[in-house]
Length: 108
Length: 124
Image (cartoon, rainbow over the protein chains, first blue to last red):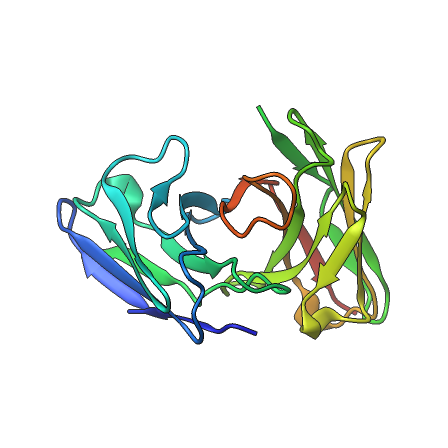
């Protein structure tokens, strides 16, 4: 099973700041990595797939990069609605489709 | 517009079983894999298993092997997840989610459509 490690666990930032979230996989997943956003009481929402492709309707301030074992989700300028928990997920090797432990982006 | 609607909350005794449904509307049900993901209170996301309805092939996370059965009824566009031998640690919200890419074997894409979640509480 591929293990995903997200860092940091919590990111405290102010609106307008840049957020950089990391996801590292225990073995290469090529570019088969997705990112999700989850707000309290809601189901997750797909943001990024194939490491760098934005899902339908996702604002351009969200971008993804990386390949192999190291990946980054960047939010260029935080909006109030971006404060949430973010998860990465690998789709290279299954079962199962494993998730990282999540990064909480909170208001500083 | 694709929608996934799940069955309602359940309260179960330890040792019993639960079966959660996920009815799809919009799109072509059979062509897209359905994944079941759970989230324990205050915890992260955990994949339980996945089914590709067009092939009727289901795969399960090792952790749940022998306790979980995922099925799909193509005639009603409904997927099911049954979990047996329930214990308190199974208390969680269970989500179904549909792939963005058809076929089930394409690693690109992501879980694009999600159900609203079903809270399963296991308590004596």
